[in-house]
Each structure stands twice: as C-alpha cells, then as structure tokens.
Image (cartoon, rainbow, N blue to C red; front, side, top):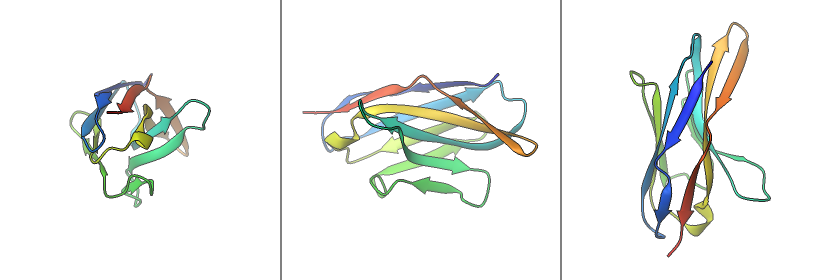
Length: 120
C-alpha cells in the first residue's frame, strides 16, 4: 500500500516563499504521476501542479504559473513544490497524491494534507 506524507506547510507573509515536500513509499508498480491539489473550506479540491511520467511533463494551474515550481527527486520518490510570491488566496490545505500504474489502471493515494496560511 502506498503511503504519501507531506511536510513543509506553515504561516508565511504575503510575498514570501515556502517549499512543500511529499514523499511516497510502498509502491509496487510503475510510477505514473505525482502532484499537488489544494482545498479551502467550502470549495472543491483544485489541482495546483503535477509531474507525470508521460508526455505531459509538468503542469500548473493558471493561478500559480510563474510563482510555483514542482520538481521531483526520483531516487527519493519525492516531489517538491516551491511556492514564491505567495498571496493570501494561496491559503489552503495542500494535498499531495501519488499515482501508480498497474497495467491499464491507475491507482491514486493521497496524503493527509498540510496547511499553508499566507497572512500578515
């Protein structure tokens, strides 16, 4: 069973930076994708950035393009989300996911989430 653990959330002032980490372990199948979603109370979880093994490479939500960067350490099976120029609207719980491919099927495991609060 895949375990996904996020870390790095916290309180930061507007304009500041924060880096989230996400480590996946326990996968017995092929890596398919890893990425980040975020959610604020009362709203749906929305995609932020992801990294896939296919031709899509890295993708970003329009709201974070140019400010956030996702990267992956293959050896550690870890993805990072470098967040710069943070805004109050970036405040959310950030969830990491890990997709593994088993033949024609893809299975997703989620982390428990980490709170990011952007406030002065």
